[in-house]
Amino acid sequence: MSTITDANAAREPERVWGQHQAALLFLQAMLADPKVRLLRWLDLACGRGQIVSNLPRALSLSARSKLHYEGYDVHLDYTREVESRVSQMSLRSYKCEIGEISNFHKIYQTQKFDFVTFINAAHELRPNDLALVFSEGISLLSSRGQFFGYDVESPNPMELGAIPWARDEIGEILKAICREFGVPQYQPEISWWPHQSGTAWSLHVNRAHMHCAVNELSKRRGSAREAAMKTMRNLLEGKLASVKEQLIVRTHGPLKAEGDDMEARRRLLNDYWALSHVLAESAESKKDSPRKR
Ligand SMILES: C[S@@+](CC[C@H](N)C(=O)[O-])C[C@H]1O[C@@H](n2cnc3c(N)ncnc32)[C@H](O)[C@@H]1O
Image 1 (cartoon, protein in one colour):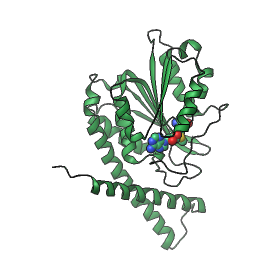
Image 2: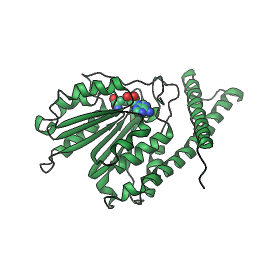
Image 3: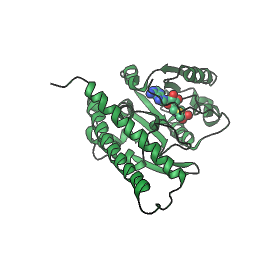
Image 4: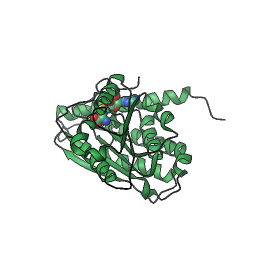
């Protein structure tokens, strides 16, 4: 399994998290269209169903009766929990699949979704898998489909092995993906959110704004993933060099760096481990993969 041990999916049924509220507002707006009779939602890395706990309060019965929910996660106990929860919610239909994120596209490749969510999970994935989620997740969108992604820039409390992605980096990755999809004029909006516990980004892709033919994205999704992986590798190498430099200054520098508390040092060490580990892993897997002729 490629998950990180420190990560876990929370479940607090009485609480509504801001990121889930934002996603549900997109869903509500789409379901309000009287022309929409069926709306297909794919929730990648769905966890224990924190977002679906809100459905009965956020959506009317008539809106829920148009909704097909599909959850995907690597943990069997999580997907079981989600299935049992959504079975009580008068949805049109629902299904959960268990699997590594590196395989999700094989299950859904012949399907289209009107809504794809990927919330609070980017920092837990290997970069190649994150590239897959973005490229394949977007290519699965129907002509009116929307993709909503959200994650913290750096988890708090820290999680060993978590990859920190900043808002601007997510923007760079999406720019590379859109270029490869043949829609360089489209720049998805990436927002930045300061919360009490740390900062976060959110990403919204609207398929209608891509203005390209129905099958165009499916045809180009492989090269979109490659472009995302290349961009991510460059970003990760740059981040590792910067973290290393900051640690060297703290180790040998003549003066204590401003704001250099134990928390900042721990975060740098944590990032150093996550970045060097993931880059070493990716170099290793490149060595093992058969050479292209
Ligand atoms: C922090 S939880 C977020 C859950 C949910 N999206 C939410 O917002 O409440 C991250 C989820 O990603 C899933 N996950 C992490 N790595 C994965 C992988 N390699 N393949 C599939 N799921 C993975 C975990 O099992 C976990 O449920």
